[in-house]
Length: 146
Ligand code: HEM
Picture 1 (cartoon, rainbow, N blue to C red):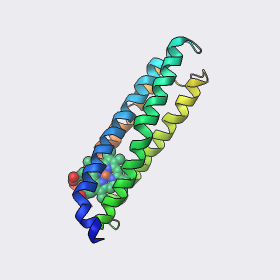
Picture 2: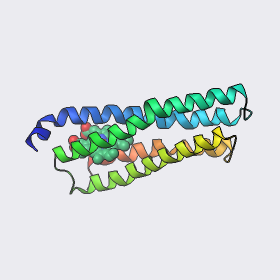
Picture 3: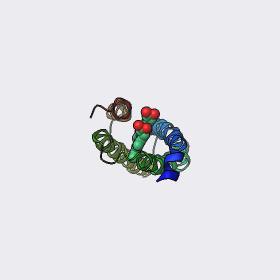
Picture 4: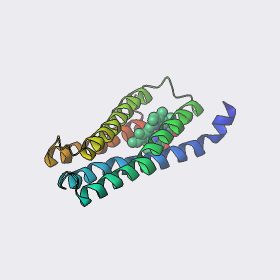
């Protein structure tokens, strides 16, 4: 506990760094989808989008999701925050963001198979989810309203 306590500023710095990377990936992926949707299944352009989406997922999204969670859990343990209301509420929205991440992965697989289940307009609307969740999460963690 004491070791964790001493590491707290570093754990929090690492946490915020990977939060930024994760959010960047969550914002980029649906933008990729909007352009990917407009390409002909099986075309060269579609193949390029599949490759870009796989890279974004493998290099940015998945490692950042894992490190945000791991460093967030260590940060919470370092300051003994597990019984605080703001953290419970925050975790609810982080779970929502993690679910959104899972949906992005499954939608990329559908696009790669040549399916186009949603319209570009719906994708643009869904693109707002991570922004709204980030606003609520940052207010909860900084203001600690309860
Ligand atoms: C994955 C589970 C997560 C856990 C367990 C967690 C936990 C924590 C804890 C305990 C702190 C330190 C708070 C303090 O020093 O008072 C913190 C800081 C922070 N977290 Fe998270 N977090 C998680 C995910 C996220 C996500 C997804 C975001 C943004 C979208 C985020 C944004 C931040 C920010 C901006 C800070 C710095 C706040 C400050 O310096 O006052 N966290 N987090």
